[in-house]
Image (cartoon, rainbow, N blue to C red; front, side, top):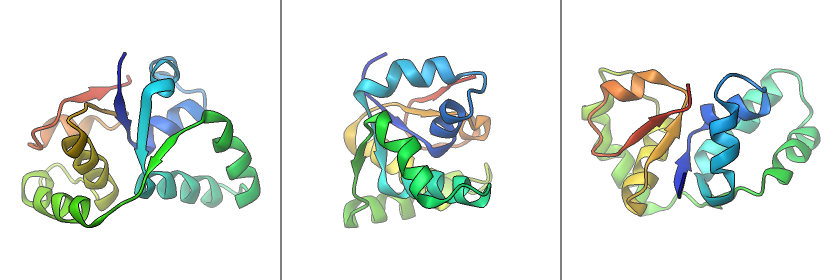
Length: 127
C-alpha cells in the first residue's frame, strides 16, 4: 500500500476487528500517526472502559511511528478549518490531514465525511 498517515478511526477499525481492518493491517508497517490521533485512540479505549495500561498494551505491538504535533502542523491544521468545517471535521481529523499534507502522503480513515472536505490530500477509505 505504501506510506500513509493513519487516522484514529482507522486504528480503531483495526483494534476492533471491524470491516476494513485488513486494509489498515496492510498499511501498518509503513504507516505514521500524529500524536493527536494516538491520543484520540487512547481516549476512545479508556471511554469504553479499558484501563490505560491495557490500551498501551493493545497499541504498542502495532509498532506505530508516532509523529509529534508541532507548530507547523498546528498552523496547517488551523488553515484547514474553513475547507473542512462543512464536512464536520474535528481538530484530530485536521491534525491527521495536516500531517499527511506535510509529508505528502495519503491519509487512511474510516470516516467517509473526509471525502467531502477540500484538504488537498489524498484520502483513502478503509471501507
